[in-house]
Image 1: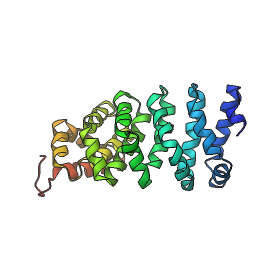
Image 2: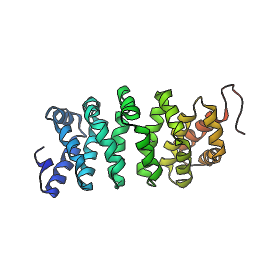
Image 3: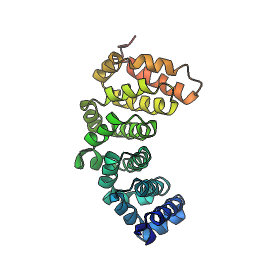
Image 4: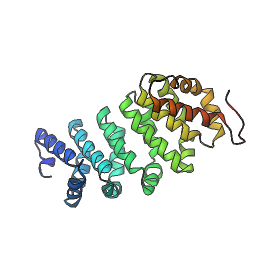
Length: 245
């Protein structure tokens, strides 16, 4: 922990990398939590160095992914820092690690409120979604959006009101050859449109149906299934009538 805040940046990066690897073990993660390592990892997110932030976000992502019991401790102090890191960093890797950590934290009920209300989460998340062209950043963002839209109708409407659908469809068009992006963006669109006829009509207007139909020809079974599921959702309105041919 001492070396993780060392003035020698090369030594600091190596120490943080070790902590991140240790955090992938549940047994080690328990000890790290006891010894306040989460606070160390969060504190160095303020570093101007992307190399330092990359290792710190990697460690935090490892902890919240592999050690669910650490999520609450990190959520209480870390959501704001992670969101700021994801928003401000120019590094796709730093953004991706921070966003994956936020995705794990958003699964906690209180995390939804923190992300979406206390920190004006939609504005920050959608700012990243608008400016990024990186699939490694789009995927965790789509996961966060899909989860929030599924678990909270208020979050779903907030995302819809902030034109999330338009941005997601744009990324589908730009990443037609990237199965992972297609799959998670389609899932996010499905959840945004669930029980919302206005979103379904907008999705058709934006050309989403054609993109989903193309997914049905994929060799990837999961991608075909997601495409079919999304088409089925977009095709039927609240009165069980077909609204998309």
